[in-house]
Length: 202
Image 1 (tube, rainbow, N blue to C red):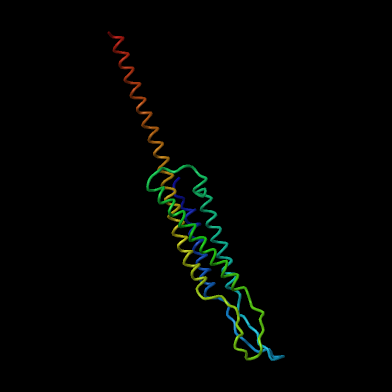
Image 2 (tube, rainbow, N blue to C red; image 1 turned 180 degrees about the horizontal axis):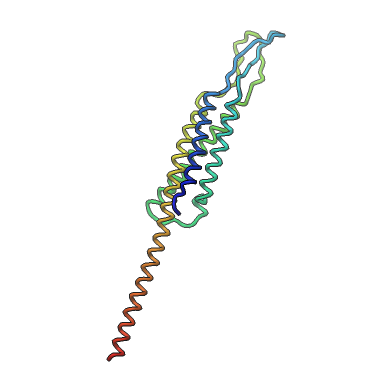
């Protein structure tokens, strides 16, 4: 199986868009401030935008789609045709595991970050209380997702390339073996004909 440029372009584009969205989610994390209630002596939390949640979920979906396309083409390594033994297959297995590990890590960060960012505390405290806290997403969760997305991109591209190389190598190996057997059979047939002709002349 040769490397398909459209598949590489689709996987790369989806990963890069997911990366941009993850960076945007990190920059647009929801913030909160404690303000007093104008009607009583209590305080409450006022939150900013929830855009980070939408960015995170969008990146989650795009990354999932990219992984689905890649493993659909390669048949998830386990369900496709056997690959030729050698270094290419070893690297294929390595990048397959690396791709899935970084993919699952990125998806976990995106999903957890989106859920945490969407959570707004309903806790109310007495006015001027020091122990009131507004739940917000910790800095760096979406940044970690963005970094893992890039690692997933690298792992996916190398996995697809090594898989294609191992698969093509296997096809060429069997083809060459078939040609070699055909040539050998043809040579033996010619030799037998020559021996038969010699016996007839005698």
